[in-house]
Every structure is written in C-alpha cells, then in structure tokens.
Length: 136
Image 1 (cartoon, rainbow, N blue to C red):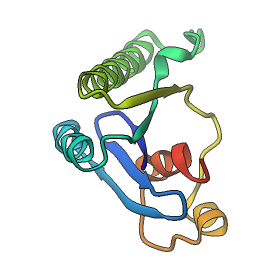
Image 2 (cartoon, rainbow, N blue to C red):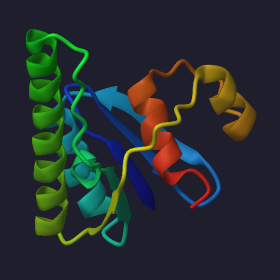
Image 3 (cartoon, rainbow, N blue to C red):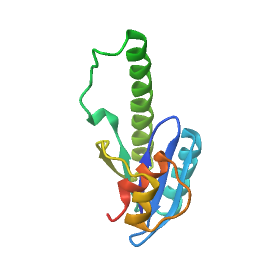
Image 4 (cartoon, helix red, strand yellow):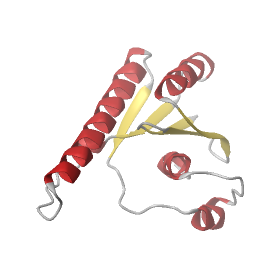
C-alpha cells in the first residue's frame, strides 16, 4: 500500500493499492495520526509519501508588508513542524517513509477526474495527497 500525506492544519491522506485509490480524506493532524496507526497495523509494508516543505528553499518576498510576511512565515513554520512530526511518527512505526518536495502545480477537481477518474468531492489537501501516490 502506498500512502500519500499532505500535512498542514488540514491534512490530506490518500491510500493507493497499486490499481486504485482506496481511501482519500482530509482530516485533522490527530485524526491523521490515528489513521497512520491503523495503516501500520493493517499494512505494515506500506510506503508513506509525505510532502515535506523543508525540502523547499526559503522564499523572501520584499513586496509584502511585514505583517503579511510574518503571517506567511508562521503558517509555513507550522506546516514544516507538522510534516516533521508525521515523518518521525512513521519512522517510529517502522513504515517506509519517502519525503517529497512540494509541487508548485496543483490538481483541480477537473484534472483529478481526467487523470484518475475520481469524481467524488475533494479539496486541495486530498488532491495533493492523491497526487503523491497515484500511479506509483
């Protein structure tokens, strides 16, 4: 089983069995931890692909006002910490973890349907998680 995780305030999680997405949902950090526990018990040979913003170079925007830059920096910092905690947790459970650099291209619902055939309602976090594992 391949697991895609897009960490953040809303965490996207998707499961790919090699031929189809068997689970896709956005959830809280703690609900994701619970799902990872289930995965480790049920599919111990899984590979977990976690989007890790730490792999990106820092970006400094001069045009933004200081307060905007600080808000962006705080959100990015929280996302980086969530990713690191999820990586460490998967390591503790002895799951195979692959860290993936965040992609700048996003799948909207139309592109998701075209590529995967998935028609269920999704959000950007779920689609990012699917994108991490689809076709691997």
